[in-house]
Amino acid sequence: MKITAQIKKSFNKGFTLIELLVVIGILGILAAALVATIDPFEQLNKATDSNTKNVAVEFLNAGIRYYTTHSAFPWDTVADGGADCMNGTTDLTGTTLGSMTACLTTLIGEGELKSGFTTATGIISKVIVNETGSNVTMCFKPVSKAQQRDANAKFNADGTANGSCPGGATNPVGPSATCYWCTQ
Image 1 (spheres, helix red, strand yellow):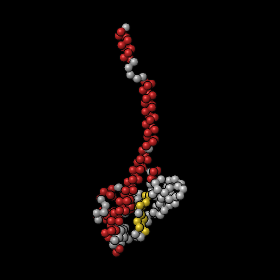
Image 2 (cartoon, one colour):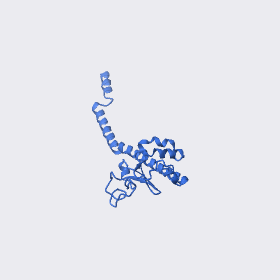
Image 3 (tube, rainbow, N blue to C red):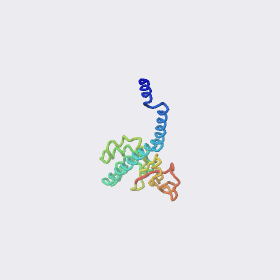
């Protein structure tokens, strides 16, 4: 009798299959709720927007540093003091930074940008350059919901204010596909 009591007692240790399934189910529900809360795709989009914003600001700063030392932007003609990296093109409205490889090379050669700047081809193709006189604007269309709702995402692609964007409207109408984040 004593042996069978010990055997029965040893079978009572541990969890039943039902108990394990219930715990695994609860953990699954908690994990699903956590993933829905964090939204990993939105986090990736935020990172992409941050990278694009940094590239736009860095290129603009490099252009300003170049302007400071040469009294012209690198895309200005040689006669005006620039490097004519856009081959006589004076209107940069809507030009993507990715199509300005000669200007990037000029800024790298002048020491205004690091040589690794051109490796971000996926990012620099999203940045739009606009120039009006000595005013240069760098714009990009945000992909993250948070950046689309940002107060600075209130411009058209050419850097002009867009009143229907969340940051530019008196009564914001929500994120719009035509709202750009710009720096100047």
